[in-house]
Length: 176
Image (cartoon, rainbow, N blue to C red; front, side, top):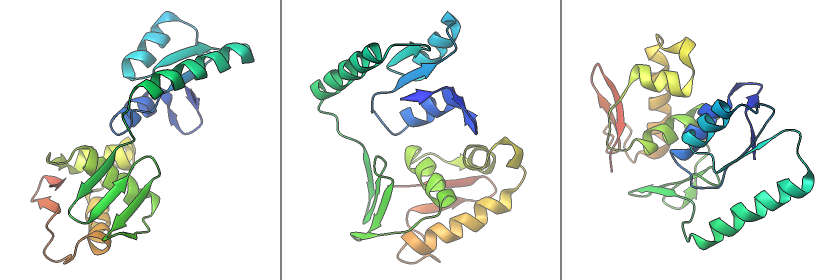
């Protein structure tokens, strides 16, 4: 369940972001009752939309319906793997060689962005906008610093990375 009125971000953007890595049902709860708001949320990837105020019985029925439809899909939560690195998006856990790896929230967001776009080069500006926010798109040194941290934690030889690659003067990519 997701309320679109988030204190620290846009609910529609969160729905879009979740759809990059999760097939979990999303039920939007919102005071916004206009048709355009519902269409925007559903087009972003929400499964259902419930306008406030609503009754508890209706909420529970919608949750049951989403759970029932989910039960009919055998799609499990995605787990991204490359070599001995495993990112479980649903539990927000990262392992290397079967051992848990502690990542800071920024490191985790950076890794999940690269994993969701595996094989594609992400520019410094794209990474900064998605991980830090639009106000930080001119701070390329942030990406460099955090890529060093990720490589130290995930690559066998951080000086010779095999998965977290630099695209000189462009950005980074995670390759399989």
